[in-house]
Length: 389
Image (cartoon, rainbow, N blue to C red; front, side, top):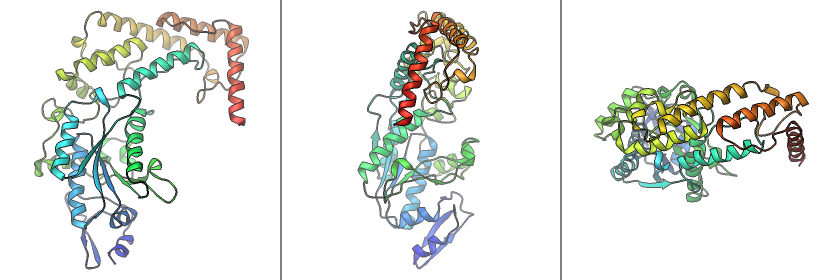
């Protein structure tokens, strides 16, 4: 009967108390509401596994503690676990210990997963090597940056979502899974438009649907801090010692300038800082678009790094100016050329590639106009064969 009542709830109702005599009570005045949908309620009543992604940050700690209380109140009988996607050297050293302490507090299992092919820093460095090879072989007409970006967040999709979902599907192969995050509307304009739940394709297969669930999506930031304070839950040292506003990677593509400056005051992060700046130097791509990580804490650079960073910025401007001369129709789409260049356009491509290669010390193939025309023809033929297959 409780299940029947639950299904009558409106979408995104904030269900905060279950009365198992046959009714469900809604209390919108509850200070720390759990936001859910009828579908999520059905899954909880059916004992679906609840898996909370934890990073060591305030939001994931808050959602795990609040959800533990809520699941106990409503009598959830399914499996519960915390899961942490370890991004390697880009993580704060305190992040995994915070997750472990949280697991002990809740009495939940903590699962730690990692990308088998290497951590986040390995991914960025390998991506750059691959992009150089592609450029030299004219498999791209413009150099591609090594870093993830706000619009291309493979840091999240590959190193978090993919590895977490892979583990959960193996762990619960025949069950519909609730994958929980601490995402909140107040975090950003993009997240302000998100709903409390979405189907997660990477957790779904025939007969089984996986759901991403954001139970504290309506909480303002001050409520996260007050809730954790009321629960006597210690915060990550990034907040308490170094004054950051959010915890993810030490330096994140989404970090504010104050958070980047604050992260540079932790001596544990010095080696990572220099490694990331080294990739800026090698690639001539700033970590955050036009914002260079090397400018955040130049006092941490060693040897000739300051001079090489200055030269990298000069090379970056040469690259940008040269590539800006390429007309849009000559750029690749989804990794392939879409039109054959004219002889004059091929000559322009040759000139641009020569300028970029000289500025960056690259050794490109296809350095003649004829060679570029032949390479475009070859790539377009391969593309057409793939499309026809």
